[in-house]
Image (cartoon, rainbow, N blue to C red; front, side, top):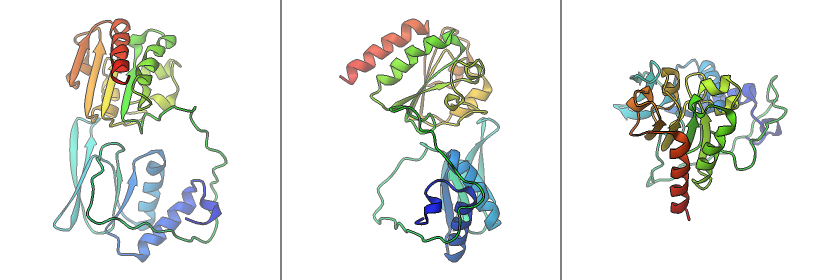
Length: 261
């Protein structure tokens, strides 16, 4: 969008511009990322188009001309398969779930000139995270901590572990430690926080309450570190370490640092 009023996210203006563009073309689908912005914008566009929205999709295909989407339900305990009737299908994809693949034909990018204002809602400022900090919703590796860390100062062992992955890892947290004020809400993973699907999720000192599992169980590989061998987190983990996190995590950090030179 070339209009200066749209340089920052403009909920009303972006909705109008996208919906108007979709109406003028024979588009089979309108696809958003299920990011913070996408979760706000996608329902607005769907409502303006008079279409249903299939949100937070983890798989999608086209069968006999119809879009088939799969999304987790019941806190991730089940998968719902949805056939979208009619066009355009309005979809939002869970970040980090889909692997980019090479296509024989490149897609086309269009620049659209939009008239009018961005709407009544104006974004005045976007506060960036500290330099070098990754958002847990976008990181390919997440190291999350829970009550097992005992106090907020002990999160430094997770920060050091995340740093060992050479800038590819973010530090997450369970709801319990966020509610206790140990970590900011932006770090919270779970049903009332962020839903993530990283390549690697390391859960440290997290028991595995259903609310937390709902936000991370679609991770490709889950590693759990907990001194309680009966912790529910081990039921969804691909690899589990039963032991004192204050002994296990520094050792793991040192080994990963060796791998990265």
